[in-house]
Image (tube, rainbow, N blue to C red; front, top):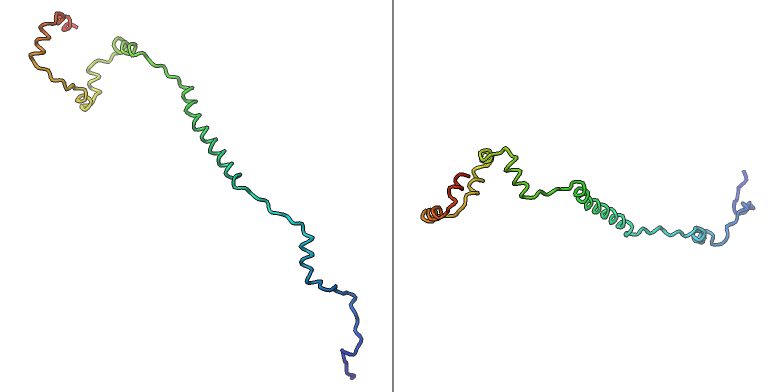
Length: 137
């Protein structure tokens, strides 16, 4: 067989040639062709604005509830004299019913701490001319 020498044989060219510094400049050329898009900046105040609006809405609702309750329930205040007259003349509650409802602590709180001397009480009773009328009532 005949010896084959690669260096001496004529070489077939592929038809493709690479320009000088092609691979060195390739990344720069690609980056120049890509449009430079800046990322969207999200402000912190937009999030806080939503929180402030939500807090304001809750506060308004919380303040309006008592106002609507007061408007819907109008209270009529009774005159103390009218209330006393009703209890005196229209009520079927007597003193024994009231005493049975009261607790012993309430009764002790009602006792007065006024100390009266017997002589003073006798003098007032003897000088009062309406004593008989008061006893009958």
